[in-house]
Image 1 (cartoon, rainbow, N blue to C red):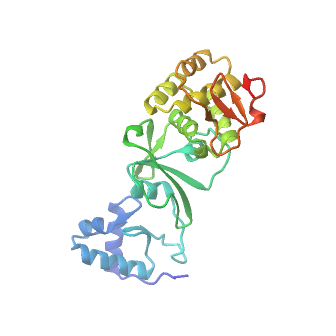
Image 2: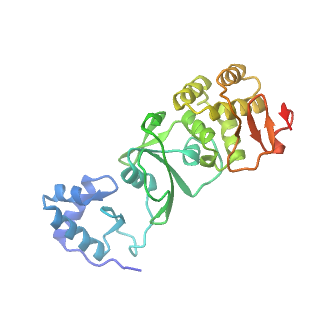
Image 3: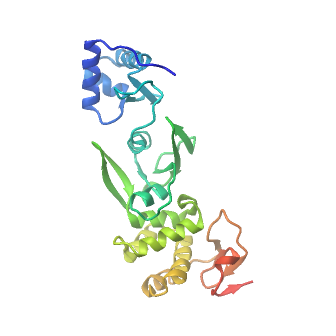
Length: 272
């Protein structure tokens, strides 16, 4: 455990300026610009501050300040969303993390879901005690976001409708079939419900499996949503898919061309 050592007045003033002029994180280039130093000298300043315990490196070239009251440099991230924005931009917070934000689930997930157009080598990473699950999406799928403020930093998070759509597209982003179904029902009972927008987003995404999953869940849990169910039925594509690729599925719901676990086939038209 590295302890924090003293910092002279000049260095303290320079660090204070860097923290004041940045938003939660800072890079060598930012420090170089703020302190008007060549990049190599800025890197040396950051290295010295890190050795003294006043800043911590979250990844190569990216640093965070350490709070004055911290007894050591073994710190956790104050707000992992801010760090995610810096590392994976362009990106948005999605999946179960967005569902928690919009109060569509009561489950608590320790890992933060990041949707990005980048293609990182590692899809599951841990930074200063915070776990991230990274999913790559094409640029055309970069829609349906809301900008939220985290302190002084604006971070993108999938809006409620896009949050549901992402889970229907990839159920693992919601923690599996049952949590996704719960989020879907909570969405339909929330002030953010917008079934027309849900269909529009699904059209934009262009994945036929989404309509099969959406139509099945709607007909099972909210049969009164006739327009939503009809819109899904009119968009059915050929072929059969699993409702959750990660789960065994031995019942085919023919009307939705969807393989489901036996327990989910109750009161549905099946082909055994």
